[in-house]
Image 1 (tube, one colour):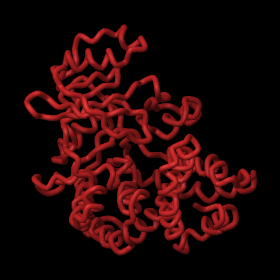
Image 2 (cartoon, rainbow, N blue to C red):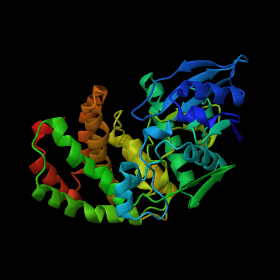
Image 3 (tube, rainbow, N blue to C red):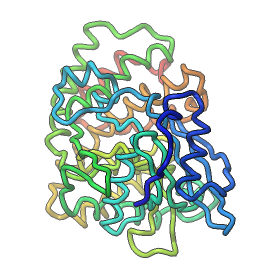
Image 4 (cartoon, rainbow, N blue to C red):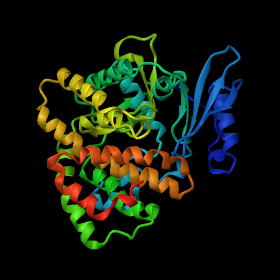
Length: 375
């Protein structure tokens, strides 16, 4: 795997990141490419499409390292993680190019379609990626392509990923990245962002000490079960906006994988609930049930009742995290487009809370977040 050579470290320390990027592209053999800006997301990453004179295209990823807080060192205590900030506490990769490069290589080793990375500079947060095209699941389905075959293939990717335990450390060339566990602290800090951000967004009083203590007591056993079940490779952001349809390929390789750099060893329900309770598009209960049946049929060793119970628990956790950290926080920062996704996320959350086993959480939400404060 090539790495851009000859890029002065002095450029990285200066303010002219554009000069650094030009030098990287030139040294890596992409200096003649036309650069076309691409739409971004809620992260600090920027993307461009590179059009080579030959007509071949690549994706240029720019993740300035200084824009993110520290990642979690292997072996860090919970107190150390909390002191380092949200990325370390929740075990996010902060856009690390080392994470992207090594995870992509691992996924390709399983026969899955993650981008090749022909050039990268880990220290400066730059990489050139294979261009897998524009056929996002969300776009194609909106244009009328039947959704069921796409979702079946996406579930088959999960089956392939879960067929064997992942390694503790992922390696590719000069890059290495630890595959840490989606543990109870990571689940907790993500879910707890609902307490922090939702009242500010909804214009309601902050949650009091009694409500917070009750929240803690309700979630602690759920987080323990989520951590105890953390045994498989978990993409962590597995939904229709991060999946590409590649019909010219075969089997599970027909699903192009994006935005996987935050991967962890996690509970096998985690990626499925992202896919089947997608905050950005409606997934019918019927399709959700059929895809869960497909997954469980392929993994007969799982206890169905326990898996589905933990799926619903973690789905409520994820909905609370998304409503707090992702949507409310981003809306308060001026990214008001996230407001459109809030009603759907509340519907998923409320649907999960109809499970009698989650009656305590249902009572908590009904008592502390009345209907008029739900988007």
